[in-house]
Amino acid sequence: MSEILRFATAGSVDDGKSTLIGRLLYDSKSIFEDQLEAVEKTSEKMGTEYVNLALLTDGLRAEREQGITIDVAYRYFATPKRKFIIADTPGHIQYTRNMVTGASTADLALILVDARNGVIEQSRRHSFIASLLRIPHIVVCVNKMDLVDYDQDAFNKVKEEFREFAMRLDVPDLSFIPVSALKGDNVVDKSANMPWYEGPSLLSHLETVHTASDRNMVDVRFPVQYVIRPMSDEHHDYRGYAGTVSGGVMKPGDDVVVLPSGFESTIKSIDTFEGPIDEAFPPQAVTVRLEDEIDISRGDMICRPNNQPIVTQDVDAMVCWMDETSSLSPRKKYAIKHTTRAARIMVKDINYRLDINTLHRDEDATEITLNEIGRISFRSTMPLFIDEYRRNRDTGSFVLIDEATNATVAAGMILGESAS
Figure 1 (cartoon, rainbow, N blue to C red):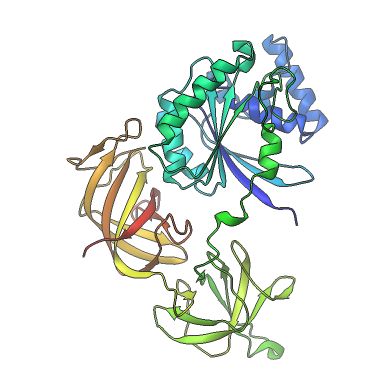
Figure 2 (cartoon, rainbow, N blue to C red):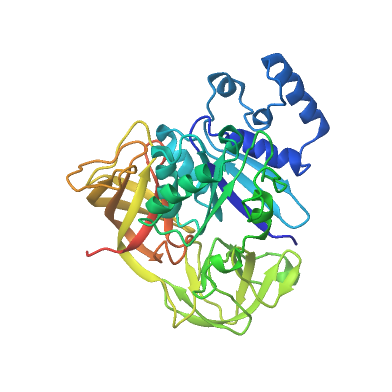
């Protein structure tokens, strides 16, 4: 099974993001001939003297005509070494929520910077969101190198500017690659135009970036999604708990505890669609069977007795507000979905609203509106089994839902337990 790398792309308008993705798909032979023909014809109609690869990804005609990319588009491609899922997220400030959505599950963020313009406000915002979402790997593609005559100084200038800002963020792995998406320099193949650059091409970096250690393999976390009890005679005594492993490694024979009841047992077996397995780790979907009959239901959590999540009703978190018609303010109530658990919460306090561009904290803020990010504390109607988001992106994240409209209004990242 070849490993999947999920990566999110971000850049401001005209940084060449769509062209870069088109170039990746085109040069890695991941598009069909009829797709290419259609793009060639449209390029001809538009009067461009080259094949406009941006058309491969800008599928929405209205958006092409306006020249902007909206919403999150997912693209899939594969090479012999790896499979890839690209979340193509928009660059405008009014689409911060789309970037949060697209980047929330990414292993890597690819941020485009125009070599002529250097690091602009949007580049800073994208890198801040990437660090807020704890994306472990960030690749800065300095694009349009052909328009600065492949000048090493232009590349180094962007690199220094970006590094200076990134020092204020928490970015474990930061790489810089000079590219020309239009001409294909350093996208799939190494460019002869930049002999001074000694690193890998973008595709080569994506194929080899090491992600196995990004997931939390220490803290066993298994949110129960579904209880399986087949009613047929031959399986009448089967009782399994299905879900996706959110952390740690689980093996038959391991001692476990079930939250919230606190009952302990031992793993009897771990089953998959293909049959039983000797160990399970994130993000595998499995069915766990226990030695003892315990009353377990959806939303419960299986973990190790000596390594449990924080069990609390009071939570501190960063939230990104996603709803156009309402805002978040103290005393408001929402439904929360955290792992497989559903509850209701009341907002206790807004600690501050964050200016994403300057990282300034406005501690006098009384509400958080569309595309704004802030730190809040809330209380839930039942205990949640949480970890800090930086320890575990699954058990450290949640969404808030407006019960009147059933709309998802916020995405949140848990900082820890708040004072009750």
